[in-house]
Image 1 (cartoon, protein in one colour):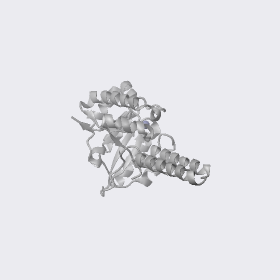
Image 2: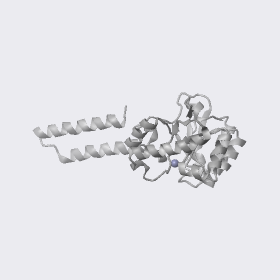
Image 3: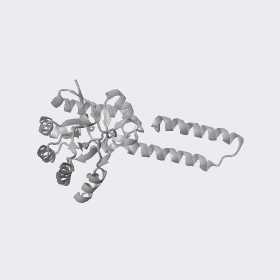
Image 4: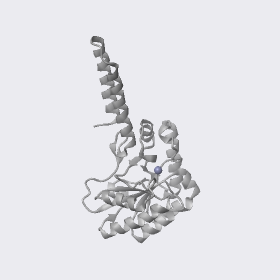
Length: 258
Ligand SMILES: [Zn+2]
């Protein structure tokens, strides 16, 4: 399996072998550089791609689902737009999971309350969602996860089980922090890119093209264009007989523990 540990062992072994070989015959220095560069490239790819399971095991879809069932997830809220998202979900009878940022929970506690009252699930998406999160030491990551859990648990009264790493990036420090906190990492296999893209048609066609049974869609409840895309997307799902179910049901995992 291609994991951070296996790749590290393989490349350390390869470099040692080259060093030993170098004692008997002159090995060109550029071979060492090339191997290190390939190693760094694999690390970068594995860190950036949540579905690679490179640093941590992430649940990104249910490949064995054959019925037209998918799950919707919303990142980076709660925000003022979350209420519009909730209205739409209610209208189309869809249940979603909201990966909340701790500092936003402090700003909009009443919205978290509404999310839960409407029967949706919540998960941890760090406290700060800092751009530097991926460079944090494991202790700082553990603190952020615990702080956000505590904020959410005021509403759920149960232990939060799901975590989605900011930007979907994983690192050895995040992996070590998760061993302490015990969260399950929930990824996605359909990324809307609605955080960067503003063109609604482009976002919608991107998601629709990728839809298949057992998929998990990543959206954001933080911008007006995402809300407009959501309405069209929910219409599409309804017309194509897709059922929106919770991440819990899709993956057969518990979002909370007693
Ligand atoms: Zn995020």
